[in-house]
Length: 353
Ligand code: SF4
Ligand code: SF4
View (cartoon, rainbow, N blue to C red):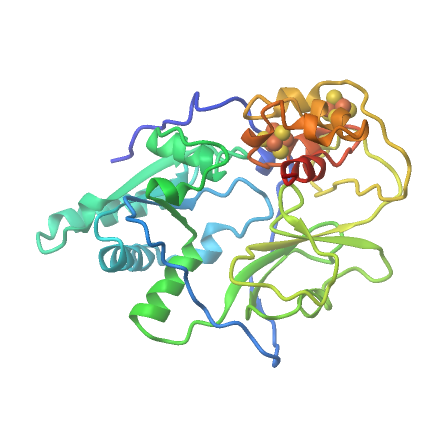
């Protein structure tokens, strides 16, 4: 049985980026050879009691790895691993698997698994597993928002979910915990997606954490272009300044954007290509008071206000206007027609002591 969708009025708007930027990946997974030192898998088990585990199988960013690549038609096998990890390390917890409501095949697989678990009286796992469906709207899967959507709990925008007994795990981390700590088999690779206007083709790679970003991207970047590289997406990920940087166990994707010297107003109206303007040519860009950023902010902040405080040199003043509630989704920067680096400014103001 599917549990009731709770996300309807959890917070306002958001953006269905999967419709705006339908991103295709080549089907095959390519292994990236690297003989240098790599990072061993380890998972920082929380010292707090875990009551809920949320597993998000509803990515809302188009550059995320598709479920079919991660699950490889082995959903029951994955759910067995999930239950084994839950029972061994978090026995008092319930698992909440969140699925895109359009992925009916996955929903059916989950329900069949749960029905068979419930039929088998030696298995208690059915009662601890819960399926939730969600619309793939960004940033519905931000930690604070997914907790509100799925569990109906309000936690502070600046709080860590684990402080409330809620652990959010991705599928590859669950597999890692199972294989490394329970099966005690070698687990030293991770799938990551690479995509963006700076690449010849969007791909899924199998990478050993510890591999430098330049080694990963080298064969795939278009020849002769200037480009910018983002770990975990251009919306709220981090930009890579030094391509010798090594990727760690938490990186899910790399986005490579061709650097252009012009602005594209209203880039969200473009379809069929992943195009973000990357105006770094030094031109002075201005806020045009369009209010797009205010309108799109899912937690009702006023990003333009922070920008104006910032450019007036009043960074501390920005903190008076609810800055700590920002979930750093990056939608304001994305939507801004002047392409102002709003999230960057917000992070800078937030970090002030
Ligand atoms: S201020 Fe910007 S980054 Fe922060 S929550 Fe609002 S839209 Fe997202
Ligand atoms: S979206 Fe950009 S230009 Fe429009 S009000 Fe916000 S900061 Fe100003």
